[in-house]
Image 1 (cartoon, rainbow, N blue to C red):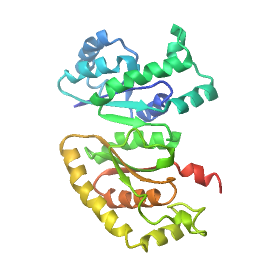
Image 2 (spheres, rainbow, N blue to C red; image 1 turned 90 degrees about the vertical axis):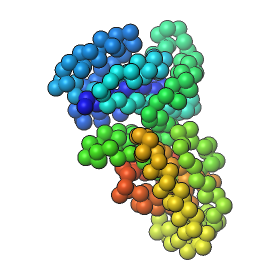
Image 3 (cartoon, rainbow, N blue to C red; image 1 turned 120 degrees about the vertical axis):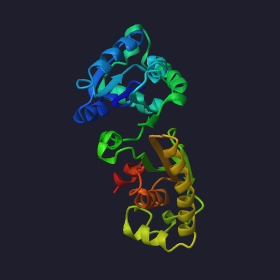
Length: 284
């Protein structure tokens, strides 16, 4: 069956980056076709499966909802939609750093007005998309990794599960399906020799392993996720994001995200993302 992916999102969220991964996987790109022409396009696509076996259709976020509804009515294709989001603050930084122009600026909008317009549209689209990804703190490497995992055909139909850590002091992530709060557990931050380390460092791992509260909480996480992820896969979900959070996203959340990734990596296509870790590594 032919594979068709619709890619959209707010301008500046990383569509160009992720498209390179699609190209490497042999996807044929079709960009900014008017929605009214989609039925004609799919007549052509279905008539030439050898030329259009894998297709990614890129649309502006303001047209994405209509495009998704139109394509979902087409039979005998394997269709998924991917929507990329990003915080307003990060988008402003990216546009000013790269000096790129927001597409709506050509229509008389200011940069901030264009970003706000995109954000209103993404809220309408989000309930209807298969994969929603917040790229605010994702590096280019992590975004490419996500694309490669999502498109890796060697995993057949196994669901992609991302285990990610974050710090509550920097805000709760927008793209979370499940959040596990780790703030009640003993905090290595208050141990002088562990304060500057992260949940990737062995002394921190040893410390948390030794705390009587950690293992029971981890097992309860796993028991819940065994059932939850199984049901999500049965329901045909393609992508799930599980976050573990602590105060700063440095120790406990990182430790548990790593443990969860190891526990479930044999059953699902698992990825790791540590949202705040660069803050602490850069300081060392």
